[in-house]
Length: 310
Image 1 (cartoon, rainbow, N blue to C red):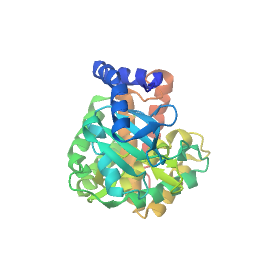
Image 2 (image 1 turned 90 degrees about the vertical axis):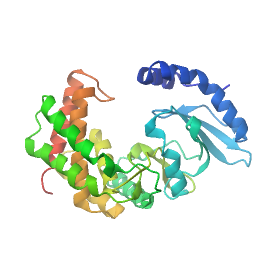
Image 3 (image 1 turned 60 degrees about the horizontal axis):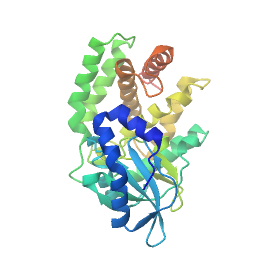
Image 4 (image 1 turned 180 degrees about the vertical axis):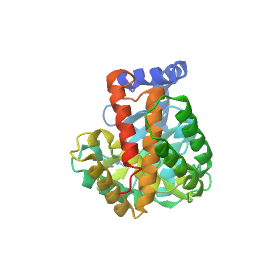
């Protein structure tokens, strides 16, 4: 019987409550059943991401793979659809899927991630090249980000009115304009939806492969915003924050072959969203106290920098 990592179990219960505890109780049986059905044998200790258990396995052919079983959640529904559309183009291959159990058998990549590199130019360039490769026509059934644009703008306006904050009105207005002007005209292109350096792994078939997609149809420049947001803690160490921010935008846009202004606008949108989210919910790295105050203030500052012209 597979051993579930304690940190994963505790995090699942803390996030999902009783449904999470019930699912954890069923999880070893789910894994055993899938191992038998897909003719795999365990090949190492179970690992985990934020919401999924990952079991290294060997297929009957001897090939290395991983069995991933995620907690049932709407945000995980379209992950296998994205992998199926990419067919290994810039992302790990999908071998098998069981949508009812939120389970997949995937090509095994390495455990080291793009986030472990120290060169910000290299990180942005690799992420941009991956984003370009993932930008294929989106299957019709995938959720369209343009359908969320109106709700995005409404949420930003409500947050600006309800929460105490120091964001200048023109910064909030600019983020709302992005949701209204860019959000409503996004193309039917498959994007990752949560592209950050931790979701790009070293691999064997290709140097780097993406994992953990949301599977959205939208503007590839949107993923440039998720990348920049994920680099925020690294940017805290920059000698010249403005220069470092715009350098990431420049490098990503060139490598991804997307409009640089759209990348900046989406990055601003993500930064303002993050500033309000932190005030309402805290961040994973800090839920309260001086650490959270510092991160929120940095999100505000980042949003202001992204409202300036380069």
